Length: 223
Image 1 (cartoon, rainbow, N blue to C red):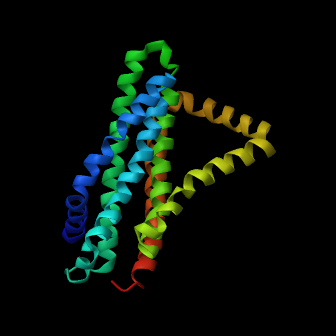
Image 2: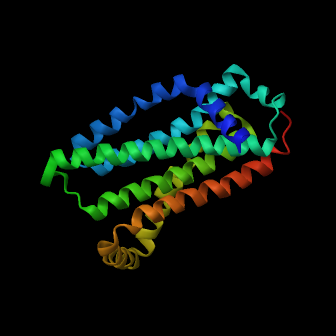
């Protein structure tokens, strides 16, 4: 476990300067939320930028060729994978915490103009972390297989897949989808505390499945 933690620390220190730069993108999300009078937009965009931050470590290692360092370190490939995903999880939790705090502060300042309820607040956080787990989970195995420079464009696929799937569902099953959403709202309204739990579990499951896939890819790859 210590070696996995050390691998995660190595990734953090390697990409620390890049993280500072990318964290400034949070300001863009803040502006979008203020213009749209919707803290939920800011909260979700912060998590989108969190995906960018989590993938920055691949760019840093590739540019500095420090990924070759793992070949001489006393680390198993599986430990390196777990360290990288632990790093991603820490990034994701940091960003979802930032989204929660910033979104809450905006909500309190805007008051009724925010048009936000406890249900939509927690639902946005849950959906945002699940998106982080999905997008990062798709990106990491691709990075391990093809490198950052070759695969970066394909990491935008999760957003397109979600958008296309939503359009298909609304066109083919618009009424059924509306009924399902109404039932979900009815169920979660008195149980909003379940939303962060489901969001956390959903994101963790997606990252866990991705880690298994990445391990299968990376253990067959020459460093």
